[in-house]
Image 1 (cartoon, rainbow, N blue to C red):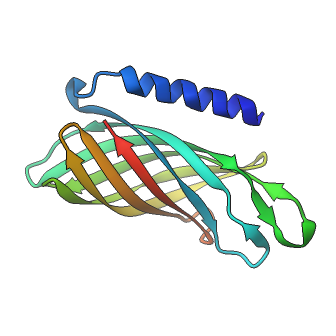
Image 2: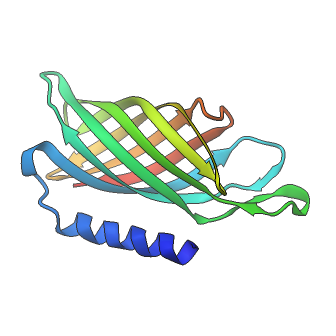
Length: 161
């Protein structure tokens, strides 16, 4: 199963690299970072990588966008005391706002589905970030929290085209 996830992720990233960068406000990106599980039962947090696609709606004071995101664990989290390992997959839809300028702030809100080893739950999700735009490339540092599990958050660094 893990090999299939990596294969699909590599395929999606390949599509991103050849996609037209500025077609009608459409943008693509990739991100990675730790899924932070704030629990005394967790020894090691999983690391996730993901892909995203968005469409900028544009507003006068910044950019308003619709974003879709998928992440999957590339390294499993581990429970303490030998209870085993776990991984997390997420699918999300957000409304995001970025302030104007080459250095910008980002806020997003929407819904997220978390799948932990076959058990899934859906709820609200929100995040904040800071980014740097250079030409058609944007680099972002983002923190995302979910109401699905208040002890679960995602700290990621990503690039968009």
